[in-house]
Image (cartoon, rainbow, N blue to C red; front, side, top):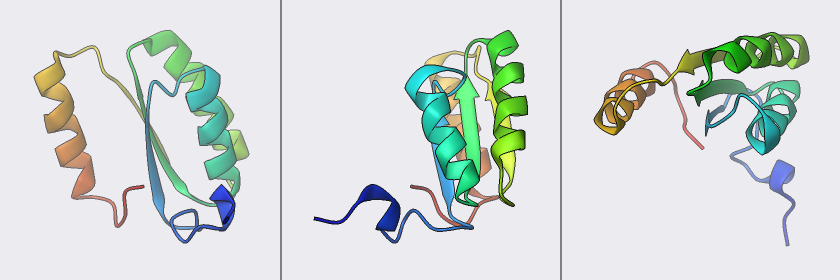
Length: 93
């Protein structure tokens, strides 16, 4: 069995999209991916916690890009948000 971090998707330069990433398991995953050199795109509904999470992720980043977005939008808006980001990144996990 292959460990999660040795899988080809978990490589520097690849992009992880994490919803609910301002705290808890989502933030922990983002920190790990950022430290691995991955690009991390985080969305959450808690704008204040998201600002703190962005600072934590920036500090953990090896060299990947960190982007955080507040998602206080209707569910249909999530598809539009993600669609606009997909065009800007090479690979989604």
